[in-house]
Amino acid sequence: MRLVSFTRPDGIDTYGTATDDTVFDAGAVLSAEYPDLKAVLAAGHLAKLEGIGVPLLMDSVTLLPPIPNPEKILCIGLNYLPHILESGRPRPEFPSIFTRYPCSVVGHGVAIERPLASREFDYEGELALVIGKDGRHIATKHALDHVAGYSCFNEGSVRDYQNHTTQFWPGKSFERSGSMGPWLVTADAVGSIDKQTLTTRVNGKVEQYTSISDLAIGIPELIAYASTVLTLRAGDIIVTGTPGGVGRYRKPQLFLEAGMDVEVEITNVGLLKNGVIDEPQPA
Image 1: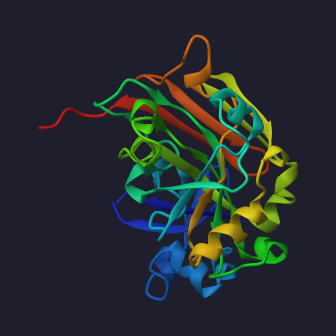
Image 2: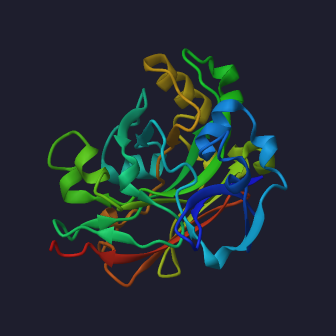
């Protein structure tokens, strides 16, 4: 299934399932029991969404990030060898983990914002996974049992703020600087995630391309490591890292400006597209 969260034409936020051009408003039927998609995941009742809800044209709604209200967004840095090499850092022995917050992420088709504070706004195409059931101290061999599904992620990064200190958080957390979507594809519909490929395009030109199998630290290991530190909850998001080809390390450098667009496409998962605008001037 393709799972979506969205804002209806009447301004009400809801959730459901999607085809290429239609969404089905399951929330209109189930919201008294499950107020949002995260609640459906936590209850283990995704099957209740199938075939439920009034159909709406995709073009008539505003897509939100598939899970708009995760408890945690955990992001992995330096997890593809080409990006490790271009950044001049050693291959990691353990995952480099930092956090984002929900207010830093918009949905498919919604513009991401180049912040007023910087002109070094970069793209990072990534695979995101969503946890489907709670777990602590999850064994690597059981880790994929905790994955509800996968989505595309553009981890818009403000490079000068990212490099002010050794802590990545400032450059990764500007409001509305990243995106996720267009939907969450359940793991059973994707097949082997290691066999999928990721492509990032800026204004239609391919800037990043990789096989998911090239991750330096694999998905099961990421889940096991993170769950050693804290309980992973249904709806939590892990963003698994970006390949080489980011704008900062190109020659000449390529930073995002208003009027550009970015696409992140992952086979059997989907295509996430966002235009770029400048952050509005404060009133």
